[in-house]
Length: 348
Image 1 (cartoon, rainbow, N blue to C red):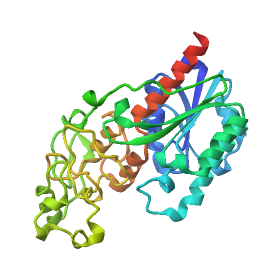
Image 2 (spheres, rainbow, N blue to C red; image 1 turned 30 degrees about the vertical axis):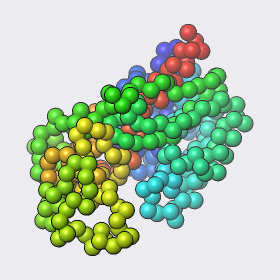
Image 3 (tube, one colour; image 1 turned 135 degrees about the horizontal axis):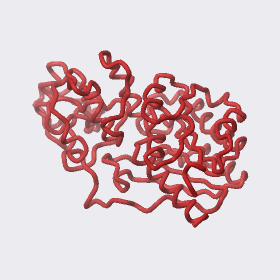
Image 4 (cartoon, helix red, strand yellow; image 1 turned 30 degrees about the horizontal axis):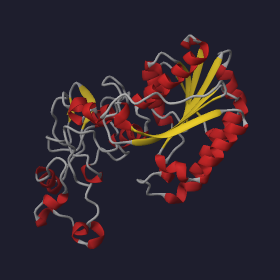
């Protein structure tokens, strides 16, 4: 089957990580839908697809059906906001709102009846009732379902990220493609960002304003100078340690204020990756946190991906959130390739 016969809509699209994976695999992505309008520039600029600002909970099925139009195979994909299920969550009070987003996704699937569906989310979702309800609704609607917890490096992602990937089809059995990498050839931090020009903390590179690193206070500059790749703040002298580190309650937080290691995949890129004190986000060699561009590369966005139309005023927190929230592009490609294999098996 030709990919031009297939139409893809990306729910909760953000700046287009999942969409871009499909684009790189030759799919016709018709639209991305998200409530955060600040994502629209990056989404449309890089993907040749329309960004629609919509609240998924209020989305009418007729609008989805109109976008799909006369496409022979309709593919609906998405990653409902996952913070309530994440180990990094700090706002559990919002949990019920985001559960409703997963339920809204299931409702749209039921109403619009696409041939193929995919959902990407955090592994912790598998333990929640809402995920079982999501699967049951799809099964009752006629879908064959498979899902698994994916370790990113096994598929070429240069970060130690685990994700739940669900695939569902009304056309027959559908499964994720086999692993593409093993520990012997995992992509590393050095493979991914090692060729970027050096910058100092608080500076950007003149040829790439997104290659921008956060400023460091004098004490944090001393701390990162004392930090070694893969080691912890426990290696610092006492005068550099924070008061919370000296308490029993703080001794377990060994992954903050750390440097990445060149020859390993990075830690999971979160929405706070641009802050040295927010995790093991220190550059392996340079005395700074990784830049926005480096975070994007570790999320497997191409080096040419544009995140802002204002080259003079880069909003580091906004773009950092966009990058950290994104589905890694390479995982988007894995999902797209899995759908292609599924369709080839049906049509020869």
